[in-house]
Image (spheres, rainbow, N blue to C red):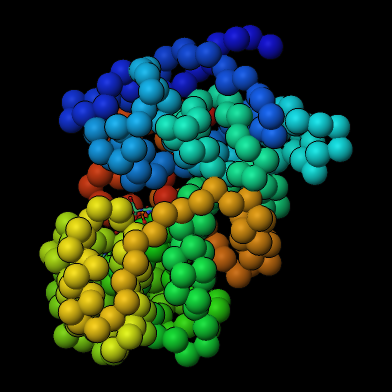
Length: 324
Ligand SMILES: NC(=O)c1ccc[n+]([C@@H]2O[C@H](COP(=O)([O-])OP(=O)(O)OC[C@H]3O[C@@H](n4cnc5c(N)ncnc54)[C@H](OP(=O)(O)O)[C@@H]3O)[C@@H](O)[C@H]2O)c1
């Protein structure tokens, strides 16, 4: 096995930073880690934020650094002979940049707790679109908001990476979902299970949504005071889950004054939940939407597109051809 691998790296984090293809050392598998040969890597807003000096950039120990949290690929080596995953298995999961090296690379070595068998029903590119976004959706909608029959849930940015899983999971667990999105996404959102779609470009959601038990806020106050306006649709004691970290610094005080509960959220790379999500994808309850596939050397173009803020579902980088 060679010591170097091809990866998409940044040489600095900040406004001018750009992704470039380079050679970096291949990660060495240690402890409970599984070494995975990456076939595809999902692109997430946190990758772009980090590249631009925000996100988790402050904790990057050295450059060049490899970004990317989502991967789908093939198991190369495992920690012990009777490990539930075996060489050759098709898996997906999350790395934890900057604690480990990223997935925009030919190999990742990740804790056994962060890698699960990928859905049988999807290819590698679709699978790579799932982990971070679907685990975030599950965490916010199921673990925190406890989606259930008849619960009224407003989901902002329902057509995006996290949103399209959040709408499906909330609907699956019986919630009555209202989603915000532009009119181009109205049909898409309805097909995911949204009972009602509010076009944020032509309507003020707080004027038309009616009373809600929960708001899953995937936008925050960085755009049009979306967080603050969300408080106006919640019943007394209702809950807002604000997912984009640091997008609404005054959330706690504002929520208290409004008589509602509010929380941030941070995703965990949880393989057990990912295994449940694989089942839901395989039985057709949840589907994955990939809006664009880019070769590794066009990673910067994928980031630019993501930065425009209107991706439907996910963008994915193709790292290697499908194995024979
Ligand atoms: N805390 C955590 O652990 C965690 C984990 C994952 C993600 N996040 C954060 O959560 C946020 C969402 O992530 P994502 O991957 O879902 O983003 P994304 O895929 O880039 O979201 C794109 C979607 O946002 C919609 N949109 C844009 N502006 C909108 C507005 N004003 N109102 C309603 N919808 C709007 C777009 O729909 P139209 O095209 O119809 O406009 C598009 O479909 C990001 O800030 C991300 O960093 C946090």
